[in-house]
Image 1 (spheres, helix red, strand yellow):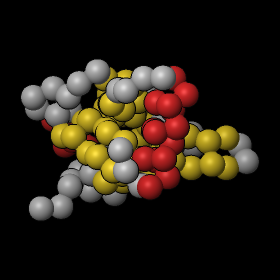
Image 2 (cartoon, one colour):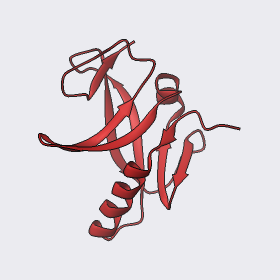
Image 3 (cartoon, one colour):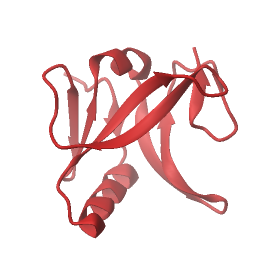
Image 4 (cartoon, rainbow, N blue to C red):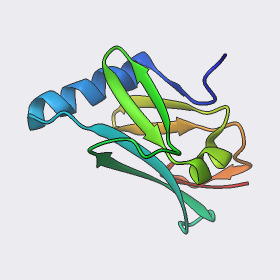
Length: 109
């Protein structure tokens, strides 16, 4: 069965780098919250463990959890990590979003 949200190799590599630099073994939690300039915003945080209703995604040792409510907005998405001249950041490539803000952290459906 295909995972409803995927994790790119770049994102997995960056998650592993962050965990190694911080000296921690946690999961990256990705969530969707109301707010932001386009209606919804992405939130990235650390979690000690997955909750019972979380989707757990693993790639190359990196682990990401997404709660059930956020998954409704993220199904079909890819979590990526991009490095550009203006900075580097985790990026959600979300086919459900009808509009995105310029900074890429909020979207509308």
